[in-house]
Amino acid sequence: MNWIYKGKCWKFGDNLGIDGDVMPLRFALERELDPEVLKPYLMAGVDPDFPNKVSPGDIIVAGKRFGQGNPHIQGFLGIRGHGLGLVAETIPRGSFRNAINAGLPFLTGCEGVSDDVETGDDLEINFKTGEFVNLSSDLTRQFQPLDPQLLAIIEAGGWHANLEKRIAKLRSGESVMT
Amino acid sequence: MGKTISEKILSRVTGSDVSAGDIIYPEPELVTVHDWYVTNFDKALQELGVDRLYNPDILVISTDHEPVAVSLQAAERQKQVREIVKKYGITHFYDAGRGGHGHVFPIEMGFVKPGMFVEAYDVHVTNFGAVGALAIPVLIEITEVLACGSVWLRAPDTVRVNLTGALSPGTSIRDVAQKLICDLGAARVDYSVVEFGGPALASIDIAGRHTLCNTPIEVGVKSALIEPDQSTLDYLSGRVDGPIELIASDPDAVFREVIDYDLDVMEPQIAVPPTPDCVVGVSQVVGQPVHHAFIGSCAAANLSDLQAAAEILRGHKIHPDVRFIITPGTQEIMAAAEDEGLLRLFAEAGAMITQPGCGPCAGGRIGGVANGETSINTGTRNDYGRLGAPDAEIYLGSAATVMASAVTGMITDPRDFLN
Image (tube, rainbow over all chains, first blue to last red; front, side):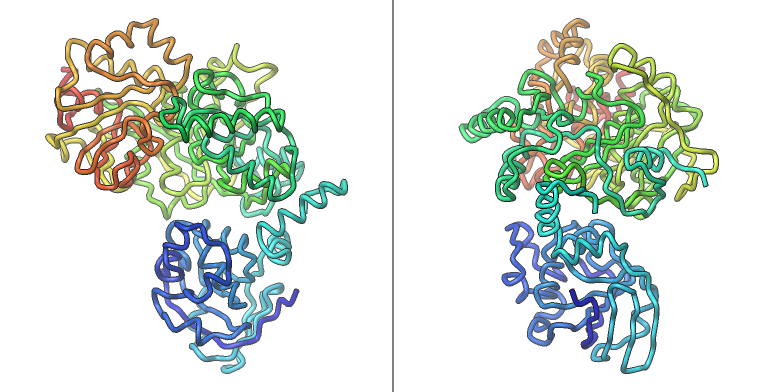
């Protein structure tokens, strides 16, 4: 898996709600889990044109409490559908789990990162090591990457894919502890 | 460095040195799933090609959300659940009429021990903390636990609450529990285990401890548990096989926060719409007319709740404009209520008495409300729609407050009945 994302920065503020801001609530109620269905609605509550502007490898940089609200996974599946990465100052715990389970490469706990970027900056992020470079302003920061066991779930493709992998291991008699 | 109760439990079950924040795959020693999720996990397992459970012997299934099938759909689902239980060889199946509420009877029957690690589909499994177990809800990821024996967990930190003081007359632990989650708020306890201890703990019985461990989940805790003590040993003696060991946090354990909390909350406390942590003193809402009232749910299922209600009800009748429902938590509690003459008292006063389980709190499938109506009850949550109708107001309170309100037809301070 390629952990290094090189692309444009899309900067958002604090307190983006997972329902409404990041993804319309109706998809959570319909239990829609297909990233292809979800991706045209990403950020519909704050920038309806967003899905037409982004390219794979671009990075969403968010402030505090990204994905707050009832923990629904659809917004994170939408981000993954576009092949985007995510860097946030904080992510509440229910959404943290959903971001892992959606198989999305992300960094969290990146205090002050909103001050380091503007929309349109060229960024290069290594989600495995936590290295963050703003190529436009020649700024490098080192953030804490996710635990290797969580990176393994993301690498497998998220919760369901990882579960399939564990079940296959179990069948072949291997330990299922990752 | 010292460890909290939760860190000790997770260290033991993983055979490693676990501290808050670690990513681990702990194997639970007990798993519970209720009647409304059994067909879902079966379907998920089938899609994954899994035809046997990792450990069917630690799984407890309870028919508590809809024990009395009042629709063809419910009867069909119950039939499917029975077939699924047979297919996987699940031995601890408590069908309608056998156990009662799945967050209550496993404690009563000795399935839960101090220091045990439990995972469940449903959020209110935190009740098992009443006897010092760490019980964590994992929702749909229970499928992974059933198939593979575990699912990833970020070891939670702990907020220690030292209980002090004493209850003021006419108040109960439910009043304290409601006010506590209001005072704590979501930000202070997000993802933490709330660990209760302190000098006043000895005054709180196991039923009160259920309630203390039940309510914090509403503000986003990972779980809640009581530091087990002599009362725990006394309660479990004769219920649990084998030795019981007490467990406590080390003196130098690292807590996110340590809080002293006084049991004297001055007056009965009411959760007002739309969430359980919107809590006010009863004096602010007295006189609000009610159409529906019930005592039950995993937050208030015990004999002591029925006793508190009976103390108010004796010599009175349910108000003509109110439907009042009593749902004892378990078969054992219902039988004990019969022994004490409580069921007769409720029946003669105009109450409906339902099969043990969740009662109306499970979405209002049993004894729900209509739009425009108001309910006061001892349920777990008061979101709009919790009792079926999207446009009904729900207030939550202690068994005594609910009973007093059902008698007068309006929200009432139960102390008016006790003087």
